[in-house]
Image: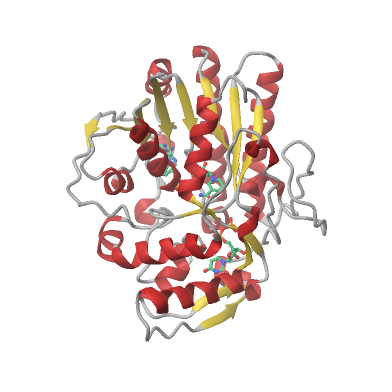
Length: 381
Ligand code: NAD
Ligand code: UDP
């Protein structure tokens, strides 16, 4: 088997790790499409990669050309930070729903298999149920429109339903994956100066607080629960799905580690302990509580708990291998060791300097395959 895989939005956290893993198997040629390649360069080090600098909103024909050449199209392109859902809700819909519709249409036209990234956030809130989220049974429960944090979930859910409908019509082969809080190397940038606009996901926020000696901030007391999944486990599952694409056709899969469930408050305490043990024994490790409104702005509401049922993906022979302690030990050491790289290379994707231009400004198509050459060393461990 030798497949051409095209990860759209493949220069981000999951995409860079996936591109590396697929290339490493020797069974795939990988052509990454994104508007940033800095994470990819960090990850791929001295390995040559095929990178296409393209805003998927800007040029339908360019996208179609790329899809036509692929065996598997992986749709990762999205705005993913909760802070972006609050600050730029319309951009979230534009990329996560409308631009992705073009990708779906192109896969249908060219009869290509689509591996689409949905999200565990599609399930929304638990509504008080203690049951794990099941792909084919669990209701999706979102808050009121005024709590526009849910716009991301809603956009992703709409796309899942459209993809499902194309499958029912017999015109699209696909698998949908719902990651549950993947964490690991290359997840978001360090933020020396935190602002609401430059506000990454919890791992990078807590790491920044530890590194720059600020208090770790627990939103609304850190009572919410998440199941954190180490990225290496995640990409193993993704490759398994691609490899078994005939068998998994038109199905949805949770990918997560239910054994790693923790409250955010316990996560903060774990990260302080690991940072003191492996990086700086004198770290102050102060932890304080902030309100959701002051941290994110008005319109925030949290998912109280996200517990996956993973029996479907386990049926393919997958099981997560990294427990919570090992997952965050690796993350803490990685961010500490690669601080200089992460500061110089990775500005948070939600910051204005990294925001994508509105699609109307992108009339000039840039499509330049480049061989990333590892000029930044090899911070892969
Ligand atoms: P990320 O922000 O690191 O990666 C997303 C990438 O998409 C970025 O590199 C960005 O530049 C690119 N992108 C956005 N708009 C684009 C456009 N118009 N054209 C080209 N590229 C564009 O996020 P991630 O954590 O790697 O997430 C990848 C996917 O997985 C997303 O679809 C996300 O919704 C989904 N997901 C991730 C997690 C997780 O735990 N990381 C959880 C649930 C769902
Ligand atoms: N959170 C927190 N402090 C931070 C960042 C996030 O307490 O500095 C909380 C957030 O309110 C949520 C959880 O941590 O309950 C996970 O947030 P993240 O942004 O990583 O993504 P989510 O799982 O909400 O999509």
